[in-house]
Image 1: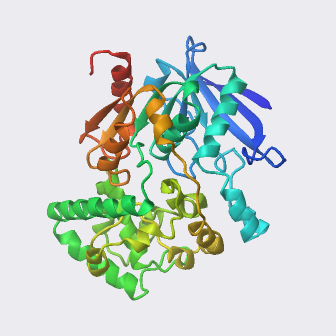
Image 2: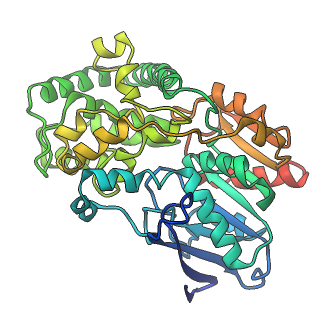
Image 3: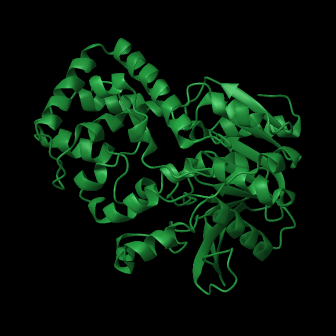
Length: 415
């Protein structure tokens, strides 16, 4: 165990590192990992209750607290009510991160290792960190996949939670991944058509890019020959508040320029910086199922026929063969796609948890569909859903979402 205290102007940051088991289910397994969390407070707030932030992903570390302006954008409001625990989920950031060097383990060993990184293990890590900090209970803020993890928390350790906040994170409970991906294709179809209605010439621009990709003539600086499916994944921009502007800027450029090639490279989702985001992504919807490349299998016929229909968080098997940074992970991701994941959520336990909280449910969410979010919300009578079309999936970063949720929980007049 180590503790480091840092002062970042008006922020007090306590960095905690503890050792936890890799496999929480097997006491005979002596493998361990390091778990890192930064506890952030302001002067005078050192004794406020704890709020643990669970980052979206899977496969992404927590943001680092910074000052002037405070980052992330929602942190200022959180620090008025809480000390915020920025937990690096296992396998990310400073919590024994998984990266290319782990490929030396060999496919079988690495696949087995990665099976211990999902939400149920993150919940056990949270409990270890909570006990380390001496908190009888704490609150949780779950963004996207972090909200999925909060649901897993309610399935096993609801007594440890005082309040729960979800932002775009009410996952489907008990449903097959195919159900989720089929519905998100419908969302992406609508989002694509809305975009082209605003910018009609961009449909032609995108089709020309798709023709270049199909001919093998769209090559990034790292040597990636961009596939059509990879190009279409730029639709993920449409799932954030201002992301359409990034797509617009790309489609306004001359694809023969260096600027376009470099901008396209930086825009590509599922890169090698955090390979877990690709390798592990479909498992986040695997509540008792093997995924077997769900997004590939349920792709609608019109998407197969019309290359201008964009996709979002739909991972593709072929990227393990075409994306240079993901190629080394090919055997691992293929094996994980066939892994039979145990059930993650307990609907009866969630419904019986009695938890108090609030959930931002985004009408136009392209990644966590409204319909299944409302279905899950009905399991949580103590959680007030705020259904809004004001924000997209990344609404938490807009700055107004968290104060609204806190007001709902506190019974204060909604701003």
